[in-house]
Image (cartoon, rainbow, N blue to C red):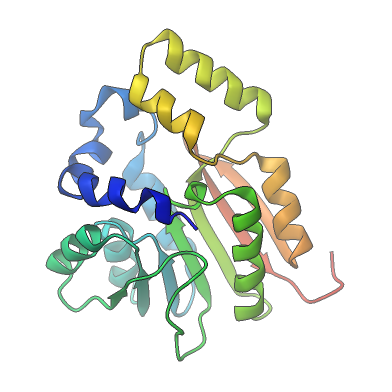
Length: 217
């Protein structure tokens, strides 16, 4: 459920905002166009929003600024502390993509940034099924995440990290659960979503999945 990375994010919390600004050479490409990526997700949100992996609240702030009500979920206590220090009235709760407190109002958009790859493919499919049952026709999921066009692209990125001796990035690529577009496309389609993908840098794509009526598509 991604909880195996909880300690990592507790340790990373204090320096996360510096990393996303491109100060770590190994992750410079991962976070290239970071502001544009978050703006793209926020712009696509409609209605009340549920965010998974709030982190330090960077996407959250943008969604609030656009006038949306947002409910935040994050498993990392240290990340939650930073997010609420930056946004004192933020309602951010302990939870993850699969296990989270019930939200007692309809949600129109589910968002996340740089987090969905912490689930295995089977967990991703389980999560998408949960969200399909939560959302009505026309509601959507908008995720920004590190994914790859196909398995060949992932293997090429691993070899590139090896050749550059980007050992931390290499460890991520070899131990985290990066999916490919064909795999994700099938998951969303099987759960009654019409999905599109937009590449933002060599790692990150915007996934926009709109709930469709049963039997259409």
